[in-house]
Length: 243
Ligand code: ADE
Image 1 (cartoon, rainbow, N blue to C red):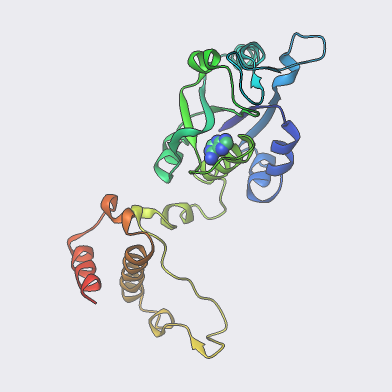
Image 2 (image 1 turned 120 degrees about the horizontal axis):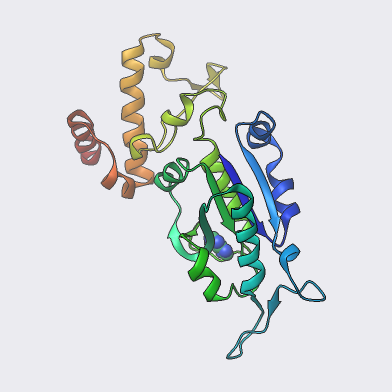
């Protein structure tokens, strides 16, 4: 997977992503990440990239040409025209299913806006996906781009140490993850559930599934609408709802 981020703050992206698991995946060659500085494509004397909005109003608007030229230069260099994700509170709200869809791409471009936004005409030309990371307003698209890159990267084969872990974590089957425990067996007078110490794998699986269902019902009942539920799951849920 190759991530290309168009931004006015390239250091924010490179500094923010070069540690931890993503940094290691880049070093190991499972991912590439580059930040393209939109300002490098300004043709004005003072490298200007924004201007006052037509019609008046507060703030500045990012001009179309440097963004268009930045994208076209990238396409020419890599010989393809990848999807362009524009980070905006006006987009569809990001979720795991979208991460899975984006993870199928070989290249992805993220367009980060600042100020009051970007001239609509270049958005119409190059943007394929409008994505929000939640119903709140941030100062720019860089943090949302990093959030998305993190969520997508961990689905790319080889990025996580443990190949199966991405599949079985929270949101597998659209259910929340069951609670986890490690040593010591007794902590502040609370004991690890006996079943987890039993070594009985089928019983442990059954307990974990029930905990996932219980937790989803309590904390995120909205997820159950699209959950992958067996007949047995439905029975367990019916009992949990009665309690
Ligand atoms: N830019 C500003 N706020 C944002 C949000 N919530 N999601 C995506 N991009 C944004």
